[in-house]
Image 1 (cartoon, rainbow, N blue to C red):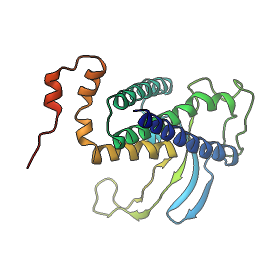
Image 2: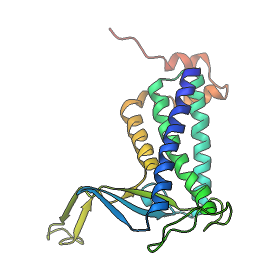
Image 3: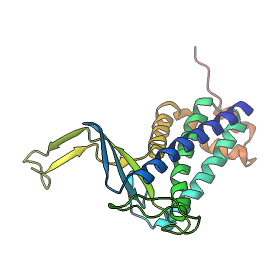
Length: 224
């Protein structure tokens, strides 16, 4: 149990450090909209957003930040329960990736507005005394930078509404935290479907509402 708990902490801290180092470097060396070509299909493009992963913005910024805090707290509590109940290492790893990614974007909202000047298309952001930045607590913007325009093409003329218009695949600009969340979720769905099916049982055990009958029902049946 101690080893699995330590592993979870190592994964979370490592992802947070990598994510923040990349974001701070981009924010303090690039202007908004600036793009560095790595290959024809990979660019470092600096943008900021107020919304969810992949730049979505359909809820209030403060509400979204508070929702993230609640979600991260819930996931953290759940990981601890999985560790206590001797869950599979793979399951803990993927859950930790999701938690770390969500926490990474929370740090942007929580601190960047307090300790950096605003990034603009004409000036690079720089650190300022804590509390004198461009926004209040939980109102900072999330830094994105990875852009993979793998395919540039045009919709066929016979397509309704978009026929003849150009399109790019893959167009979202994202960050390391977003990638961690997405990879963790995909891996959970692919490799941990049985673990996910027992989420309710894990919570019941943690709350002391798990019975021996439930335990027998959750045990896999032996096949010849």
